[in-house]
Amino acid sequence: MIFLYIIPALIAGIGVGFWLASRRCTRGEDPIRKHPAGMEESDPYRLCETVFTSAEAAFFNTLRPLIPGGHTLLAKIRFADILAVTYGAGDRGLAHARAGSRSIDFLICDTVHLPRLAITLGEGDDSKSSDFIRRVCEKIGLPMIRVPARQHYTAEEMSALLSHFPAVQV
Image 1 (cartoon, rainbow, N blue to C red):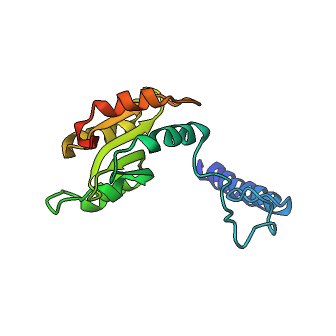
Image 2: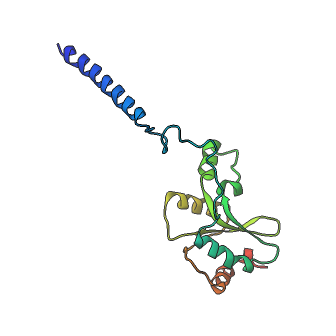
Image 3: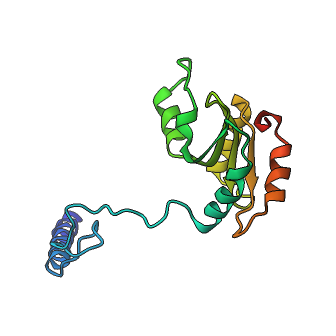
């Protein structure tokens, strides 16, 4: 007896589902796309107006002249590019994926391009991503500092910052 109620309700539910789906398509709304159907771009990529945010540009322009001779200041480095995942890792694919989705704002390298200091801009962000980067940097022996993001930095602040890291000294 209960099947007499379930079967018609199931048929009605499927019918309403198809009706709603057809209404969505006729109005030009695609649940995945942000643009109406037919308005997609075949080549959606454009050049950004700037690579840095205003705080990153201020930090970079203040720090760059203070970098010791032969050292290099790199910006927006993919974290996985400075790591080597060991073959002893339980799941190397997962280890690569966890590191590959993160980045370091600035990296100071020595004369043989060995990373010496990782710098991230921002407030005391304790997100999972920044915690992961901090833990891995500690493990691999790469000093990492977090500098508050601001619109202006002084050369004195940057000199004081670098003075705490002998690996970056000439």
